Length: 263
Image (tube, rainbow, N blue to C red; front, side, top):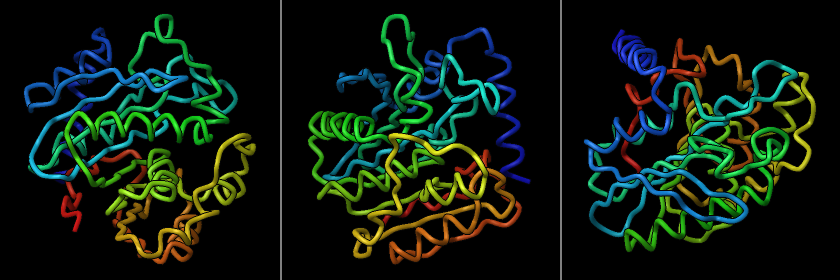
């Protein structure tokens, strides 16, 4: 009941502010909580982020999902900004005193006339080497801004897959967490009977590199987007446990039941 009420409240707020740009609305929600907006130059992209400086050596990065990538099954969107930003709400409800960053994906929250971004970077190449590299560069900038040394990576949906890919290549990650993460692309496209994401990396390919890393992967039993079999396959290879939330779907108020302990 609590998660339903929170979700409805968020949706009402979004509807009430429908004429307000999503970026402005995100800032209105985040800035009173101590976050500051920043645009990170990470070629070939400019990335939108919200950063709250805290204490200690740890930076917790929340990576957004794919957002509004498609209008329909066959028509890509002109603006991938999420309609309900699950990762943003996870970040805003984090009670930690550590440094916290909400990091959007290429094209999200930006005027694409001013900050051009090719459509393929939120469709076929959403998890491409270029996207992974750009996110990693952006994280380095936030680390320097906060004088942080260690990372916690938390990803929602497609952001979960990117968090896993980043954790496989970086040496400073001490915890990986995903909510409804898209962690096995080949399995996903096969199960959903959709076209391959040409140019994207599959997180499961190198999941065995994560076996010594503390992890948390959560999936709802009612998720119609991410097949349970795909999440289970990734977790087996990564040496991690998959936690199932009963009666949870894909686009849920994850923050209402999220465990913010990253130890």
